[in-house]
Image (cartoon, rainbow over all chains, first blue to last red; front, side, top):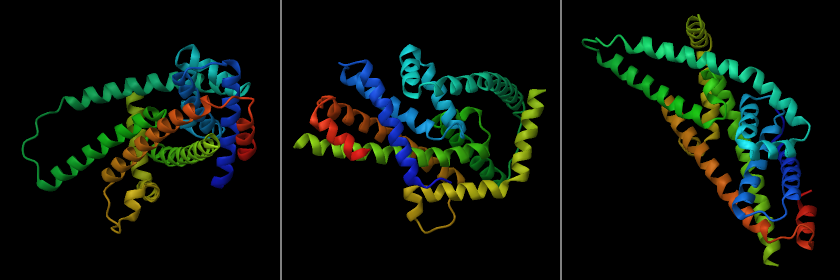
Length: 188
Length: 92
């Protein structure tokens, strides 16, 4: 695994490049527009620092390129030529996997709903089933938080979560550093 | 057919890699700030998942706050000014 300090440097480099590209096109952005641009370029930089090796990073870039023309335009600017390659990769596999999983989930849900006649359940089995239900529920929540999480099985989900948390921390540390520096400069 | 395949794949995962899941969950625990400080070894999977979700949400919130703060700070800095050059030299 790459040491975290080089991940920070890579993120910072890509983020600054993205920011410069964003702001060079629009001189007078509103605060809201600028906030969105900063967040988007930070997310895209974080994802592209992984070079398509993780599922969440591919999903993040694909989602960013989807939301209307603004997002797509920004992503193209930030990633340059890389963006076309990345977007094509996700588009070919994503839709197919998505439809299959959704259909199989629907069928599974329908078939599970039918047997409702349970007579008396022993205590241990009840506790285990409650625990299982909690884990299932929380797994669903986690899937909604990780980009592209709905398409992962449990093992990949945890692996992707680990990597995603590490990347998020790097993102937060670097952004906090830049905010601190900017504040110092502003005060002078 | 896709139903059968998906059931097979989930059954396969739980049969083969229970240890793998336990190992991954323990790695996750080490990343989370609250659980890491607690001494007990017996933390339930659902608790770990809950803490993970809370942690990710708080990280997202922090990113949003920092984006807003940076946007206000950078708005006052002219791209060609001396301040921008200072920032650029400090972080590059």
